[in-house]
Image (cartoon, rainbow, N blue to C red; front, top):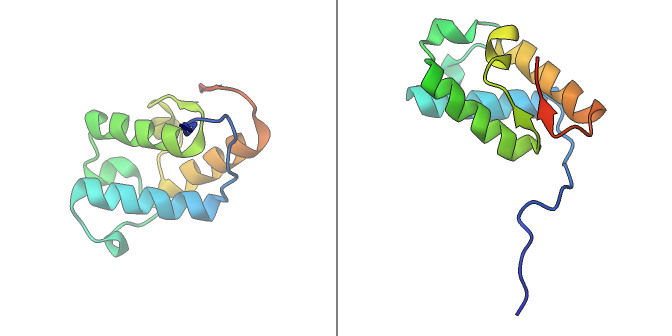
Length: 101
């Protein structure tokens, strides 16, 4: 009987644009709005994203990207555009398991 390894430690590389699309999709789902209603240059708090939703988003991003993500990063990089660029940089540059700002 074979077993699948869920977390093999191999990270897939994502571009900032791919991360942006993923963030838009997840945020629009959380807020029950159409993805085209999300502006990547608009601060996330302008959409009414609360801290609990931020924690869910950070948890989902951890699973996608393969490293631990502090929810505080959402406030340091307050737009989808800024956040996705930073996450793509971290993914490309780091072998770290923890991402803290």
